[in-house]
Image (cartoon, rainbow, N blue to C red; front, side):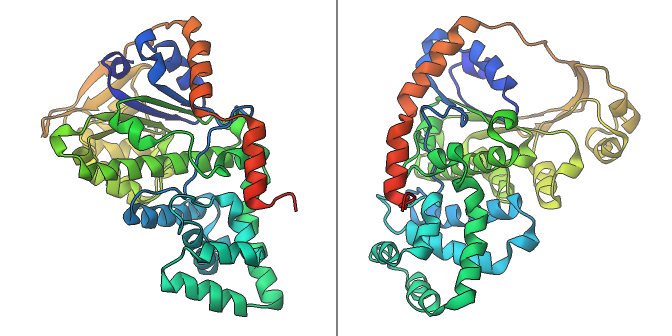
Length: 379
């Protein structure tokens, strides 16, 4: 609320939905036009979100790596494996060869089954390794091996393509909003990924893509002189659901990109060792509300000597122990009480939602017609 009232750029990724609803009530009238509200369950005006869009060759490589990492995150590693990675990477690189007309995840099955479409994409491919895969390796794969591999790849992507809500989002070739423009322009980006309305796996996929695209947008700021980079405050609730191991990179470099991260989650075992080490190795300010005995034993080191594990286990509601870093100097930990949320203006919520839908969403019929035409789903 404070960042929004101060006119700062703010991003919030919320897997529950209530936080976004509360924030919308706090938007001042003069900033209503700056709000980009992404609600995947709004099926009448779906907003596009294409992971295969990019601006620079570095972004292309990052997007492909992230998409592979996302599939590893969503599915058990034993059912992904090196062959899936090999086929998926070559499919994405072929689809991304035409920068002005990038393919989408929805079209991935088509590149394996439609020779004409594959050739059309290959006409834009300059990478000899990718060309060799499609012209030699894939064309020479026959019979049961070919059908097995096709089924293997399509089944992973298929669970999203077969869902109408997801298909209309990830099947649009251009995203409905530009995260680079949102970050550099200091806008307000709110992603309501309510698991109840979106579905748990769908919520995770969209959150992972959004956080990856925010990282890509932040890393593009190297072209802007450091003193001209505007602060952008990104809040991610239940962040372990929306981050791959590349979060380690952004955590170590976020400060120079002026991407200010607030990451919230419940207990330490939710994090992989790499992400946990990245967080504790890079985060300057750390706070803990009442936590369990296992986490208290681990976090005690962060708050010693002022507080012990017993203090952390016995905190009252709305009370936390906080260790601040100010101007690169760490200060002793102290206990504080949080301010209860203020009531906002409910009357402003619907007008903001309507404005955002009209600006960034597209009519459902238009989107569906385009996806059918691009992916030949009707054939």
